[in-house]
Length: 486
Ligand code: NAD
Image (cartoon, rainbow, N blue to C red):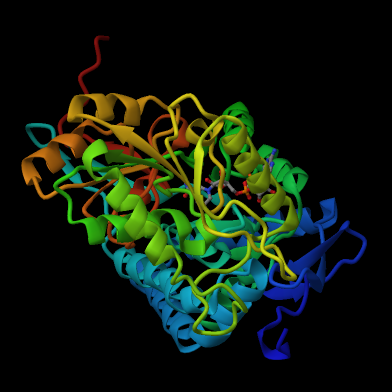
């Protein structure tokens, strides 16, 4: 890994890098080769204590600054991230194995968008004046929550660190971020850049560790809010632990989202949407439309065109800008996906393409498509989190909507059709937090992002995120005399 892009220690506490090798070692493995590229150390109780104390002592002063001042720092950090996009993208590729072709346009850039957007919003955060008749009124104050803990998944380490940090800081909170133990490097750079941009020490701390470190932070009484990006089982545990302390939560969890393609759709765009919604980041995207319902009349044409276009994927060295499909993040994740591929075959789905590990170093799988998948198969019900598309047939709109919604998940859903009345009807019928018409997987900072049902609670991005990082205080003001009964 180029020296310039390497974080300098395991943790970032109170404005500086901190190393403590007494914690459990965390090996960072480059997924394209399997080589260990760095060793970090899990946070000890002492490191966590330092993070909590730093956050606690910095937060009140930060909250007392004007929104304009806070926002200026976030916007400066956004500029620094954009200036350093190349180095940050290289680091993201080392951390995750995602191709540079993706990381250079979707990670630090998306993080910078969040910092810029919430930096701009910071000065607009106000309460309201509510007249009560006569000379009396109530005003509301929008106040920060206090200390927020962010816990990340491994697929978008820079983006997740910014999507949680930017609104938290804009609202006047302090953040302690625990990255995924699989991709621990990028959040450290986010912390470094924020402080270089002028963020006072203690407001954005990064501590490393496995689930136990996250769990200890969630249970600490000094923590006021927890925002998790992760799987449903982890979400259940974290939400329950947060409830014990009546803490605010945002839960960005898994999905098994439907993508419905009607026979009047523009076939080329529908195939493009299905590729984006299944194979970008080697399929490691929470909102992926992995249950692709194709209306029976166009199924074979869809599969034929899809297979042709998949043969154009450039699979190889993630650092080569021509590479468009990289390895899985880890050997463990690769094995989980291979197990699902074996289940798909055992349950009688038709393997159209892929279905195997590639004969090269690193954790590479071939982009995989199953057809003739039925609703009861494991590959149609469970989140795989890898490059495996399940194609299911359908006859009509009412049937497909019922089947699309027959899942405990509700993160995203998409529809391709030229009939716009039908498109809006189907979007309204989807039980999912993020829906797409004739597109898939867009996630601009201006729009709310999050799930319904088991896929989550709360929303990230957009003005909606402000509601999840602040609280309202009502202040009653009486100008008349107080009327007491005695
Ligand atoms: P995971 O649930 O295994 O881990 C997520 C994070 O939680 C990690 O940092 C982990 O260390 C931590 N953790 C684990 N147990 C914990 C506990 N008891 N207390 C506190 N923290 C704990 O998920 P993953 O494998 O890293 O990521 C993949 C999952 O994330 C998929 O299900 C995917 O759909 C989901 N995801 C969701 C979104 C979204 O925005 N909805 C985005 C990306 C990924």
